[in-house]
Length: 106
Length: 150
Image (tube, rainbow over all chains, first blue to last red; front, side):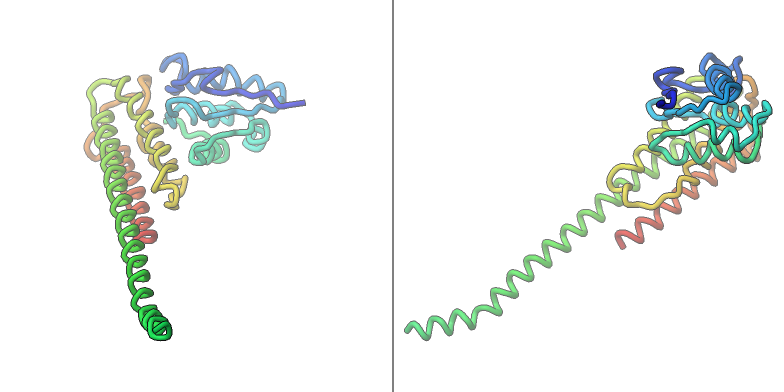
């Protein structure tokens, strides 16, 4: 069975930005609530395609992925659940940083 | 007669060889010089774009009020500059993804959202992190230019 795929640009927003819900509809918290937390709760593997947006703010990435760790999911579970795809290796490294080293919200 | 012209032809071979070799050498060095010049120009443009991001980031973080349009522009500019590194001549440059990550983090991790924005003083660590990240990328690119072209 193929793994479900979330393409951020297509399924969420071409302009993912902001940390919290109050920062806008395409915030990291909104992304986590919509895609990451349900997959983690249901132990469902998910592929996340990151390319195609007009860029990412680090605060978005930190809140989405680091926020999942802060919410109580173990870093190795978060890593195993999501397969990240991007031509930009720096994006993937950054997300793994937030997952592995815990959250560092402001 | 025939013997004489054959001798003449053989005598001219070194001359022709030198002419052809000289042409190839001139062509080769001219091509190298053009490639070096082209790479230098593109690198200078890239560094200007990088410096523009630094300037815009400092303006953004030192604004009295949160500027949504500037935040978006910074995200786009960083994305563009990272994409540019995949194209000629930078495709052959070795630039660690870590340096690009540090640039994005320096500009967009802290104080980047409406909910937590505050005008940063001149001695803010956010501003110095931006300058350091830009300098680190510039240094790496200059090192790669020297390695590949000089």
